[in-house]
Length: 109
Image (cartoon, rainbow, N blue to C red):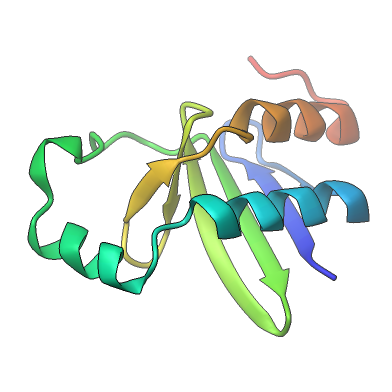
């Protein structure tokens, strides 16, 4: 079972998502995250789809099966791994932001 912790950099609040929400986030990341060969190709040939260097809004820590991965959420639609800064489209970002606001009781500014 996945454990997902979401931290808002602006308000400095951190919440742990419910089991159902965490499983949904973990499965969505597994679906949209590029595979090994795609990541290598994108690393050597970034092309025009390189995401701009902007400050992340949220940090998402996913602990699943003894493995911990840290992601940064940019503008609710781009998720990038913190270690290699490789970004990809993440369509569940606005839902994660809403869940964070619900669990923390802190409205997004």
